[in-house]
Image (cartoon, rainbow, N blue to C red; front, side):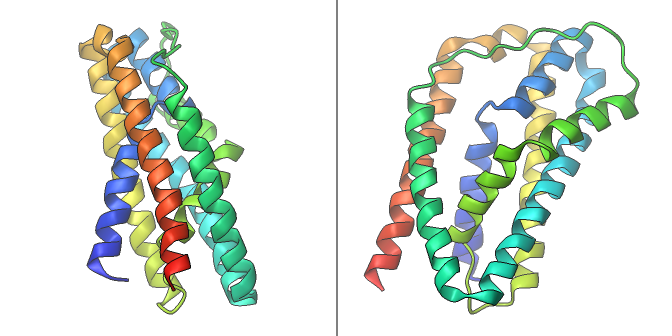
Length: 207
């Protein structure tokens, strides 16, 4: 894996994590109702959930790569198409974030478990990783090393992102719900997804 590949993965992951999804809705709803005390437990739960779903995805991709280079290539093509489709959906998503405040006090461990369940058991998360990760994997490089680097990078970014959303929701609630901010995030993420899908196809066609 080259430094440029890692940098591209890090930049893409950072932007994609900012896009509000089911996990962020959960983080924001807890923070809106209970303030900053929810930030650390929710961030830990999100990080563990992403670690779980990403590990399952990477192991599946590793098995595909070991079994058949052709099948792995087909998965990369399908993944590129899926990323473009997701990008188009994000562009059309608008700027609404429906997150009702959770006012009932919850223990930290319960919040961690809730965030982990929502993140790890969301089928869309595993599907997304299967589509997203092959665009950065080098079949000629050591798979275990790539798996370790990508997972560590993504999990740290996911933790920081959830912590940031919880802090903003707890301190500046109107900002989180501002339509223009959310629309900008969705369009930035949509553009990145479309670009990643097209770039993946273009690079492969060039070879």
